[in-house]
Length: 601
Image (tube, rainbow, N blue to C red; front, side, top):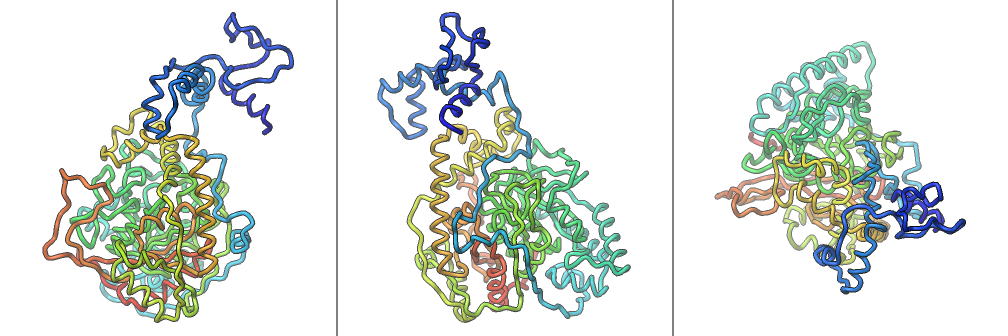
């Protein structure tokens, strides 16, 4: 768009038609423009309330800028003619409603233009996946069956040691039994599940086997649309929302023959672990929340209530509950899994991924749910090579020495690095600049507030259970005052951070990091790199943990003696290279020898 066209667009957006025919909209004292005169900024008809220089002083404090009295007076003088008109889309008179599924015009592409390392990563179409062969016989007791990994469940179903219907009934029974303690289920889909299970059994009996997920019961974080089944976002204003169609991931799982047994809880609108039904609890420590926002998937997988689950992450929502609940969470590369029919929180950040009880299981599920979909402009069809038998020897594992030496790293994290060395992985010290990475969250808060604009402007956010300073209602309102200029600058910083990550990842095959290190959670969610979080050991905690800011009026439970809970580590992979972190994760998981222990609910 050239300069003159851009100016004309802005003026037209302010309802100013710069032609003689529009003279009726112009004040009588204002002469029509001379023929051939170009449009100019600041000449739109005055709209909105009049502002004064005094209005700018408090706004300056919010934005941390400073203007002289003369500059304030100049800004106030033509505000109604220049900037107020830019709000017409929202304030009218020509309001334009933006449909729920409408994505922004710009799309984040994690593959940097001109990158030698990742140039073709998202364009390759051929994939070879090699999974382990399972030969173990099915145990007799139902609890051991329920806690088995997908690889084992799949083998038992395919070899007809168990039917999908029986397995589904085992999980349905456990969901009913333990949900009153965990509060991880929003909608139990019993009739739907049994119908799917019986259909799976009939197909398998007739020789039509769809693959490793055929007949496997699973749960969905309740932000994925399911036709005819409520999808509530865990939030009061949406608790009666029933979609007419399935989301892309649900369609893919239906095609794989998987069996949906429950829509699982999430913190309201994908924040933390409190929803309209209460707080979802950690099956390992019932006095604390399961963490969020994929709280229900974390609790249900950790407690053996589903074979696997689908979670989502914008900035930690798979990683944190996987840590807390002792499960394995794979956050795929941004764009790997289509989000069509999933609640949008932040279009350039949201990612859907599997939560399971073993590393290899995550790749089985990821294979089924990946691929491009027309409904998600950011989704791509990319190769996903993986060999479960490849081992980890020779892989270059990067680590940040400072991060491994201080909190939140623990002895479990440091032992994981030693384990990697013992497995023949080559340790490589890496570093990143000491930048204010939290500044990138300007983008997250702005996108989230835009996604739920109507909720804020209609005051429907008052219905949400959590009304504390760090909950969405306050954050969405605060975000209305973020600067658009700062948003653009944060976007520019995002590209620079991506360039730094490209430099780091060119030196290694993967990174090993403390799972909840704030910088790496923010960095990799904004750059789109995949991460794998899995149980590596146990730690003792003397106080319950929470996703919420400390509240002196509501202190967290303390424990004496301290409680033993799972602790996980995280591997960060190169873009569209989930196979390598899974390859390393399988070797480390086997060496740790802690994945089989179960919570005592």
